[in-house]
Amino acid sequence: MSTRVEGAEPPVILITAKATLAAGTACLMLSVIEESGNLWRYTLSEPKNSRLAYGKIIVPGHMAALRRAAEICADGYLPGSIERGLLDAFARAGVHAKREAE
Image (cartoon, rainbow, N blue to C red; front, side, top):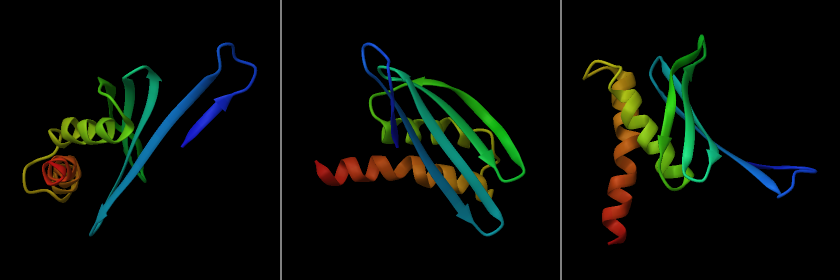
């Protein structure tokens, strides 16, 4: 989703991307907001906790930002947990898509 800020000179467009990852009882929401250029602010949340993890990353593009944020956030969960599996699978999906395109 992008939003144009009216009246801003030069024109400003804010980009936000969100992914919802769910399996079994786990439901995670990952969002990235472009702050400038390739700088993205990410937030990981769940229905009862709006800020499980957050930070900033530098990568080109919203999908790359979502996948990198998923990689970082996955480290906060034990291997074998549903949450870790969801985040790892989402992060790896970009790697598989890139390899298939080559």
